[in-house]
Image (tube, rainbow, N blue to C red; front, side, top):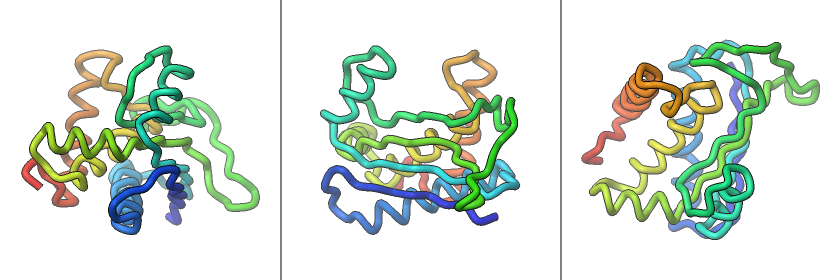
Length: 164
């Protein structure tokens, strides 16, 4: 499959190329592990705390800084599409949705949790792509366990463990 991960930066990051490669790798790994058998596209925007706070307030009625927001284009349930998917005629890809990553919040959380910013950004990317595929840790306890297991499996595969 030829997956397309489009990444835009609306804030400065320490090493833009490293973040770009990390997000592409993590998103690609989730799509592979979920056996997404069509060309998929995801738009990722890296933003600052003010921008994600505004978006969180507007779209989720939560006036607080968060780490990542996911905006799915289609309805999935635990990796299974619940509606017909349509590929863009120009790209041949199915747009799964948008991911908004707050890099500053990710760095703060990495310090808080005692691991690297790369591990935190990798976790947030993995988490968001799973949301785009219909996984939800807030639905019920069983789905929380399923999603958390998939997050850890993907991060372990990539060597992004909690001590990394």
